Image (tube, rainbow, N blue to C red):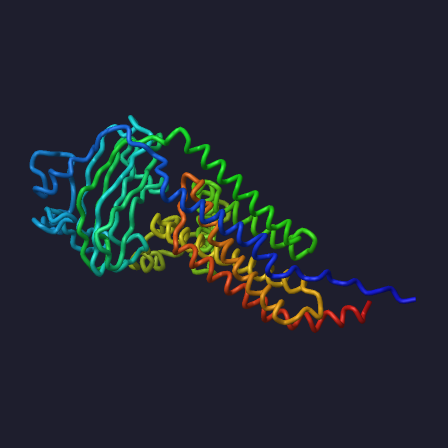
Length: 433
């Protein structure tokens, strides 16, 4: 007597998926984004430490030793400011473009600095490095005068043509800081930067800020768990793969950036050192020097004279990764890892959705579920960006959302290509028992 074939449970109607999962998740994500974009988490606890009027009236200032800069490419404009007053115009130049620097002494007196500045750009193009644009930085040097670029230091990066806009950022003061350095620079390959009213004010987080971050993080996790339970992802193997993939993405986006970056740097340095050391990868592959016992006998005098006439090749330095090259690797690895993870998420999610639809389901319902699946994946990509508001070292960007959406598109496309193949294999597997 043949056993009945296991039946796939009927697919959830698209309307229920929309009303009971996607709509609540979208509402919560929107409220979270609205709160963190309007709420001011830091309050000022001191006056402005940068006397911007000095450099705006005279560049360079004659009566201040704290101002430095590449003054040949810094010009004063009497009526070009955001309110019609004076401002500074900075000409481009990769590495040594128009630059104004102010040195902050004893920055350890405070824990945080809120940096603001008005910027306007015209035709600023990116130079050899992604950070070679119009920018405002606040970085710190240690007791040996060494700058630490791994610590968060970017306030604003602007390229293209932008009207007057207020750039703002909060920079934490590290323990090693001996001096702070405010940089206003036009490091783009081309274009012009106008800058005015740059301030650096001591600040401190509001007492309720940690509570809000914890509440929104818990609400985000509860909403994601509810949707996963409602969709029944844990009942299928592909659903478990979707959950695991999503957890990896969330952990990577919310973990402290310094921890992941340090681990990535160690792996990149190791890989680059091995690559330069092995001959098949373009390295020298030089063997170890021979010992006294195994060293061959010296050549005859005639050969020694010929060898002495030949110029010796300079010794090659030990393999290592330059800081600029390392930052390029890190930026490339972060972008590509996000795209790969979201591509896998789109692939597993669409396969899980397709295998969860029972045979004979009307075509409009299938297309509706597929469309809602794609909308849900885009909502998850946006929600993970918004989740970065609860992290002190991260912030959401439209650029990351676009990269993540591109990865989702690749994964969904691969799933659509693989579905016909899987459907052909399914009857064969059933016939073979």
